[in-house]
Length: 329
Ligand SMILES: NC(=O)c1ccc[n+]([C@@H]2O[C@H](COP(=O)([O-])OP(=O)(O)OC[C@H]3O[C@@H](n4cnc5c(N)ncnc54)[C@H](OP(=O)(O)O)[C@@H]3O)[C@@H](O)[C@H]2O)c1
Image (cartoon, rainbow, N blue to C red; front, side, top):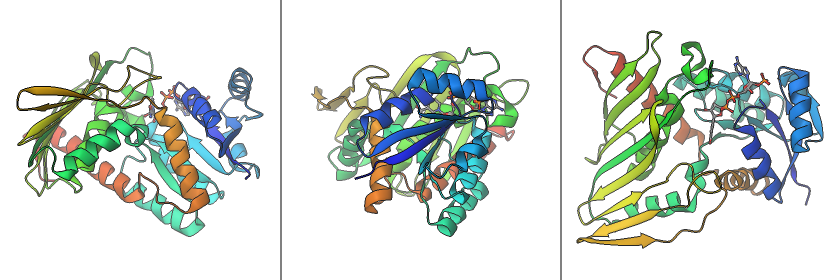
């Protein structure tokens, strides 16, 4: 079997995790990297033993010996380069958020249909066994009737000039890390919220540095979350059912990039640890896309799921910007 040949657009901070992941997957091999700057591309290629480097993203897309493109660019470039890669005949793994508007997700879906290629949003944590287990447990009824999902993801943003703090580049903690607890709640609910509310602390340029949001699903399930750039590292998910509660202490970044998985089931005053082996969730997402391309399997993160994510994030963002802080989803 010939492994799929991957190319990376954007040799930034996240790209080395995909270098590691692709190296761990027998059905994938890293063929090329591209930067806007030929020297940066060459330096990344040398540091990570990538066979070829390109001094423009378009040049990598024109390379016939690349099958899949990983897009690790700032948020405002995701839709444009995903569509350009699809139109160049490549399959795409694009970092989250897949786009900043529902119209752009629809344009990606149309390009995928037109070209017969697959585009997947890189929500790596959704491939981790601890998340698969938590979602299955909650949806099986083992926690009783689901009442509430509570999630957090914060860190200090200290990197000067980071695109995450740029209003014109899809900045803000909601789009950067709030998207994790929002996607988790939707995964557990298995449907889209019918109403959202939100409040945020925006900087003088309108970028949120702390965000709190709430969602109500048609089943009655409630979810709330906070995200932020101005607080220490916090990551947590709690699923509250009528019979039991499940707590995930490190739901989004686990070993080898964070602490090992930690799931605790609390029922009738007793806490039970659920043992989950550590896995490289980035390798799991590469395997998932390989199976979609080579075997015709359904990708775990469908375009439809991503469309729902972007719609809810846009609704939450709008809700926080209205004077009342309220909106109907
Ligand atoms: N799934 C995860 O675990 C995870 C973790 C972190 C980030 N992310 C996502 O991955 C994406 C990239 O994040 P990152 O932390 O790797 O970002 P980064 O370090 O800022 O790198 C982004 C790369 O984009 C390229 N770029 C193109 N146009 C740019 C512009 N106008 N300004 C700045 N850079 C530009 C740059 O490469 P050249 O200039 O060399 O071409 C840069 O190296 C984001 O969408 C983020 O949400 C995901």
